[in-house]
Amino acid sequence: MSRYVLAALVAACAIATAAPAVASAGAGHRHDPAHLPNLVSVAPQVVVIGQADDRSGPALRFNYATANVGAAPLDIMAEVTGEELAPAHQCVRWAAPRVCLAREEVGGIQWHEPHGHFHFEDYAQYELRRVDASGRPVMDDDGLVRTSEKISFCLIDSDKHSEADPAYATPFYVSCIARAGWQGITPGYQDIYHYGRTGQQIPLTGIDDGVYALVFTVDPDGLLFESDRSDNTSHALVRIRNGTVRIVEAP
Image (cartoon, rainbow, N blue to C red; front, side):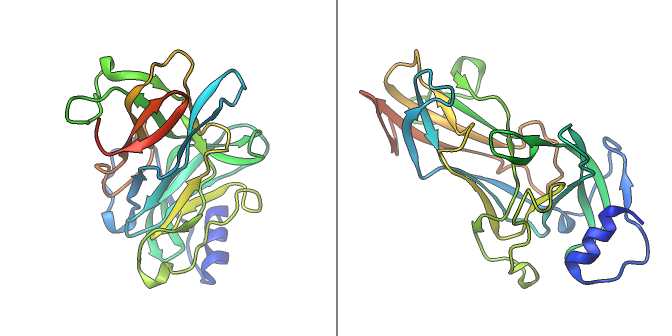
């Protein structure tokens, strides 16, 4: 029996009679939205200027959250055997809450030394962009001022975000150490990364004072299966002036 099924049985205290089918990546399957998460990029409420991770100069540092407002969990599993990148598989069909019937490969999970636990790779990307006269981010190449590398995350239920099905009232994904190869976000919960964590930054060396858009995109490469991708990007306008920063409503 697949380890995926064994894990689901333990979580749900249920009995499964067959191993879940794992569909091949890129097979073009269309999945029922009722069985998929909907990841929402949440614009930050905290932006500060601090030191860059490498201590080379100042950087914008910010909290960032992604919430699951869909009908089903974002549930990712990998056969983690060491510190190498392990293929990850997302549940795309459920028999019942916490009992998965089918998975598809969606990327990889790997040990992340700066945070001391396992991460799902390429989960988010941060950009600093110019704004137009109305205060909207300029999303073409000319608008890009600076970008982060693609950021990996330990996907857990950090905090409640919104109401969801009572079947998901209790947070389930609580550790990327105890369940090294099993991560996710329960419907109604959000994963929050604090501005002090490694990677939560845009270095500012060489950037002039002014109003910019901090643009945040969850799943920038479209690796994950979701019921709606239209809400995967958010932004916050920030004014940088004399070594300080604040969130603003308009230029």
